[in-house]
Length: 604
Ligand code: M6R
Image 1 (cartoon, rainbow, N blue to C red):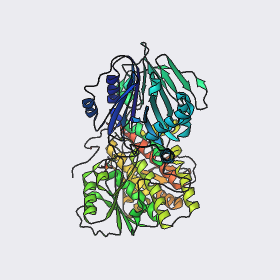
Image 2: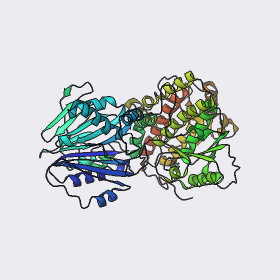
Image 3: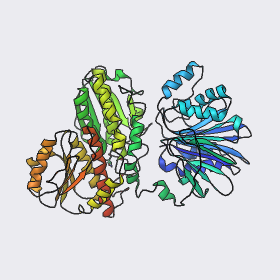
Image 4: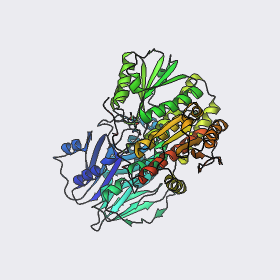
């Protein structure tokens, strides 16, 4: 997830920007840059990789006296992590830093190019500065031009923009991505995407709301709401605890990441979920020419996403799909035929077992695709094509938001392939897209839900094991629920197809065998329900998750009423994540760094 800093004042602007970016490192980034406007002249520096590279580049650059500056750490979403793609982005006289995604960038870019504008980067961000300069030429008033620009762009953003003609003004706007303004008693103004860069520099902050925009000068903060009405800037005292600030008030990064799912899924959908079709700018549809089978290969949570994808691909795209655990696949002398598209899934893009299978597929001459969260990772560099999941950095070892975005990508990809194969009508696709757009609101964690699970968790701290059960695509979700629980609670948990319990595991049923039953209303409800009844009859303790009340359960977690099984899938995903989190917290475990595990498994 990108980070923004900004400053207007008389201190050492370069140092303030660099140390601000350092405080945002925890958000993850792959390149960084700064721009300083002093005496009507812009100085800008960018570097790929760690901030030390930017520090080296700027070591002879000095800023003394009044200046304004903007800085950015970038997590690539549109375009590779290169210096050209790093922010700030420049027009003729202005520059911009931006977090978020500009949904209509391709359209605006085409229009600007027709007007003769040359683009230097592959980013969506660059359109902002060119659009601003176009508007500036038309209005001759920079703030008017900025106001028009934020009306022209659609999507999510936190923006800081500076322009030569206004060397004491920093323009800002916020929609969907966080942005704060900090002040202190020496009349300096700071901007940042989270509290951390402001701690120690500012006494008070204002957290901008969606739709807010305006400008800041050494003596003024002009703030406007989404309707263009000027509003009062309300400041609150800034807490001075950095670790707490990084976790944004959550107890653990995993908790924060569960809460972030709504926003990152919106990012994943942005620019891809069209009106009645799925658009993947990054894919050439010829990738699917001559393909009769899709083979999905991954480890851990990514494997569960792959398994979920196999249900969607066969159901909607009507393409034969197989799944493979990477560590098994690499040693079993698999038959690989060239009519198979080989897809690897990885949050990190570095998992050794998965990477090896990708190499095998390439060596066998198969077409390859990676679904990944980290641009420029080994897998992204190696595969023929890649789709980025846009979850932002995931710090908790137990994967949550990466899984949520992988499922979102796979659902979209199943519709994309369905279109190529003509297996869904336009109406059916449009209806899916409608449902997809509802996912962000269904994964929002409500206080009531979290409180309910917190209370429930105290009854599930012992016992001789957990069975997470579900049918169809809820089976991989059951596997994922069990993996989450065992990773961070160290309790024994298994995921099982609900219909398979009677073929053996039901022998374990007794009051201290905990069954977490996934009972979607819209997919095989009666079938799954009777499997749970069999367990209930043998006195297993049942916690049912459903939108339909279930009287044979000891505990019941009610998800919201919805009309599609995939919405139920996403809601239940949040429930099982929260349940694991709360059980782990009650057991006193280190939620973010569970014993014996590493975030990225780069060894065999
Ligand atoms: O980075 P990857 O998605 O390739 O990682 C695969 C697994 O190591 C990973 O999903 C692991 O299972 C997580 N700890 C699950 O929470």
